[in-house]
Figure: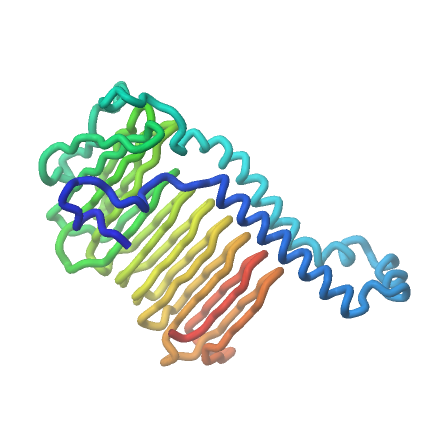
Amino acid sequence: MDDPMSRQNGQPPRDHELPRHEQHRRALLATIEAEFTSQHHRADRAGLADQADRADWAHRPVPSRLRGWAAPLAAAAAVLAIAGAVLGARALLPQGGQPGTGRPPVTGSAGTTPSLSTALTPVGATPTPVQESGGQWLVTRKYQMNAPVSGLVVNDPVGAVLVSGGGSGGVSVTATVSYRSAQPSITQRVSGGTLSLAYSSCTDCGVSFQVTVPRGASITINEGTGHVGLTGLAGGVDVAVHAGSVTATGLTGAEARFSDDVGGINVSFSAPPRQLTAQAQTGAIIVDVPSSADYRVSANTGMGALTVTVPQSSSATHVVTATTNIGAVTVGTG
């Protein structure tokens, strides 16, 4: 992945473009339809639709008859519910603006660049917004804090959140703002050793955060629409995503929790976690853990392949829970 911290011209990498919500929604709906059709054909080939079975099925209680349909219908309903939010967010995609002016649009009270208070200090000169095609503007700003933190909380309605573990030093933040009319103000506060990052409410903007924290810091991320990526962290992790993907590598913390309404979860650990939970409504789940420990595994999928290859024991102190309504579930060793 292109690292914005390594860019010399101040322009963010292209993967900070705001999510293409409608395209992702259509792909998810196509996957659901394909899975449903495949299951239906398999049932026909197995002879489940013969007359005797039809008569038996018709006399079963209603909840029993619907049980096989519950997971795909629930997941499809989740996708369609999110579609409303997706359509509302389509104003975030490049379409119109102020072409030909050569100037950023009026920013109102938000100011001309993202701002943070004294806990995080700006690095370098004040950046100039760059106009992209379709009237979308991008501006990237870097910050640092020399004091170490023990925790990080990020609330990001639209964008990406990338967090990596560093040494025992302070914190560095690269914030990339994508907007069309008024860019938001980035907000932060430090309380009890925990740094919280967010941004002011807006209707046509998003912010991507790239943050380096001490390896042992605990991480909490609430992502609306976008990608969450974690690497090299040793503290506890709690990630919730409404629509988007979650990836993590090199985790060594004892506890981790990942939830994703629509998207996918792919996480790997370098040390056996004591408690790991990965749950999705629609999307595949891949969990890799070291083979040096036994695990008590609870894995399930309403529609999709289920593969568990880790050493298992009912008395294991390392617990892995991986469930999804639609999608494959794989729990293995890296």
